[in-house]
Image (cartoon, rainbow, N blue to C red; front, side):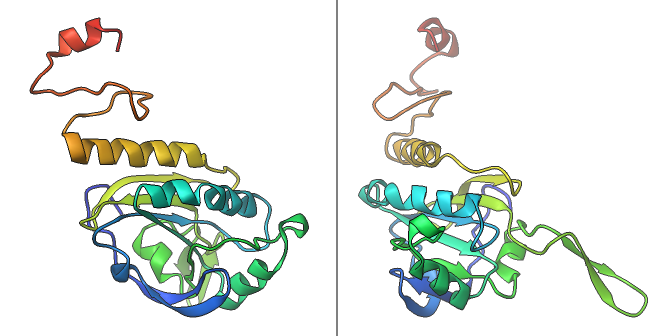
Length: 207
């Protein structure tokens, strides 16, 4: 899955609002808002709950920006639901309210090219090299359904949620103003207009 391409649609079971098991379709969320879709490897693990709670803590910030937050792993919806019933102090994710999608058939991770492990054909059977779980990947999708940013971490490496918000701000600033955002840009800082500013003048201002 490359930046600039349309985000693959999918339909799968999910846990909504931390308690309701229902079918979820990405296309029903796209349109009129941005989407942050992030994959994590497994329920009932160590790094994953820290990320899910970190995204939940910042959920009001995403919503204020008109961004839908969606999580996805290759566990079942029943595993997600059970994990959601466990308190944080016991390693659970009770209190998470954004959708957690169950990619049980691993087709979503495969379509986004973030499935760790691979199938290996043998003479009489099919084997797997590695483990068929989702890598720690994230996709920022615009209102037209186009992927504008993606990152993929290996399993041990957690993400920075504040950086995701910064990227949302940068994308929305560009969409609104047509100005590009330099390194380490944050909302409220000056940006760069190629049609207005010369490169030399821009660099002379300390950028």
